[in-house]
Amino acid sequence: MAAPKQPAIEVTVGERTVRISSPDRVYFPAIGATKLDLVEYYRSVGPGIVNALRERPCMLHRFPKGVEGDKVHQKRVPAGAPPWLGTVRLHFPRYGQHADELCVTELAEVVWAVQMSTVEFHPWNSRRADTEQPDEWRIDLDPMPDCSFDTIRRVAGVAHEVLDEIGAVGWPKTSGGRGIHIYVRIDPTHGFHDVRRAALAFAREVERRSPADVTTTWWRKDRDPRAVFVDYNQNARDHTMAAAYSVRGFPDARVSTPITWDEILDVDPSALTIRTVPDRFAALGDLHAGIDDAVFSISTLLEWAERDEREGAVDPGHDDDREP
Image (tube, rainbow, N blue to C red; front, top):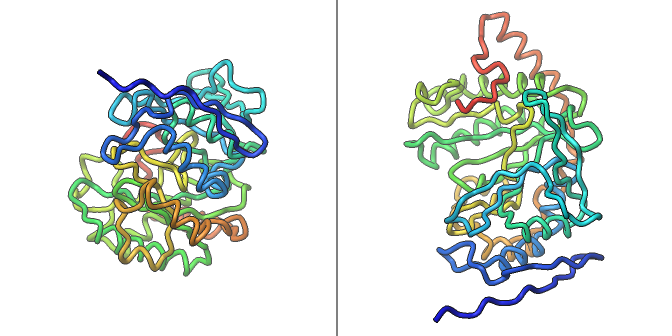
């Protein structure tokens, strides 16, 4: 006979009370972690996840039956959401539609989203004040199928070198999968098109310095399967990546975790899970806490983009939102 289901419980988050239904539902079978475990994880890293999501439109990746079930990509906040939930209205010209997306300003909104079966949080790189002006440049070191993590480490080192040379402060984190993400805070004075051009110019420079390890080739079928794709298109409008401290939808409950540059040399992404990251956070705090104090102008990168274009470089994606 199946064990009786645990009844719904209420958790206090700041000044809010959030009802959690089916708290004993197993979401991560490899480690036996439940929906309530997920709630408690996010509460344990509260300042970090709120800092990562603050004022940003947020796509929710929901797993109503746990991570071995179907995944739902949800933009719109559903009807019946609590009146205190923060949202921002976005327009999608391609479809002629609007969507009110979650826009986090407090931890209770994160816990509410977990109650709605959200595992992953994927924020925009712009904020509610002006969603068309990104304030975050994202460097996605995306490994191809036969790429080793040692290759990712080498490429991260090259990216760090280039960032230092142009005076940009990069804030690395594990992707929660096989890659590494690096965030740079930027002046919100350019649109998505220019931020993406700047990201492509940077990616080309990393490729020039490490041609055996790096590719900027657009179509996946044409890439070296052992290479790292520096995915500049993550800076296009409505493209999102897992936030710092976001759990990923894998059975072992890995977390996209901020790390130091020195840690890249020996970090094991598979060891950073909802079981281990809370103690790490308690010991180290939020390693991305200072990101808003290190703002970079992308003017140098736009000069690089103009140089590349004069020399005949072509962007095969053209802000394309198709999967390459």
